[in-house]
Image 1 (cartoon, rainbow, N blue to C red):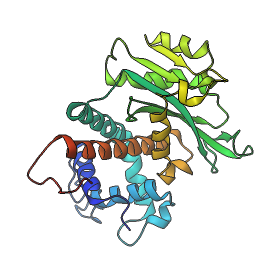
Image 2: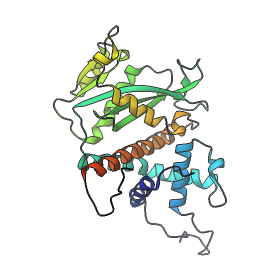
Image 3: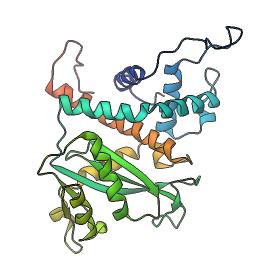
Image 4: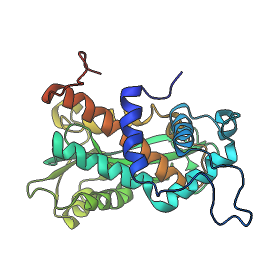
Length: 280
């Protein structure tokens, strides 16, 4: 069973491969001029996508074509190069160019997931009987395209995570002058607006005691995006221990989500020779 559909995996790999440095099949620095050929980047990339989607361990994904050690080594090499975050940003820019990001309303919210393996972003989860958990604070545009996220231990409160989450928006450039963020009541009537004001944003914070459909009509996109993110089991049941590895998988997941929305929206807005007869 493939981790991603071919209409999604192929353009994802085309852009990812363009960010990789050119390498030959063997290392020219080898003293004898020969050694075991380097495993193809495409094969390792497919394995990493399987780890992200299925949430399985590297040894379960490894086979005779690629070992678990090779997957981890190549993953760390690409993280040092910053390829995963650059891929996420390029796909965001492509979506903005072809469809357009709606940055007038930016909902922000946190999401609890499991982190049973411990590590740098694991802590006692208040929603899972203090088992190991991770909190993911995400900001999206008005229709749910993920703009950035930060991870923290499960026992962290939402309000301290708002500032680093909004800092992730700086990579997108200047926001519209009328941009506003939409928060739930957990951010508080004072803390949330004060943090938003530091970035020149207005804040609309939900008030306890009022029905959610009345006052939170613009917060539902981030809830849906969190649900999309939890479909990647490596994030929903995180077993990684290092923060930079988790951030890389999160960037890759957001790249997949944004690219999927871009392809589906482009099918409606544009026409081209190889356009599928049905919406993917």
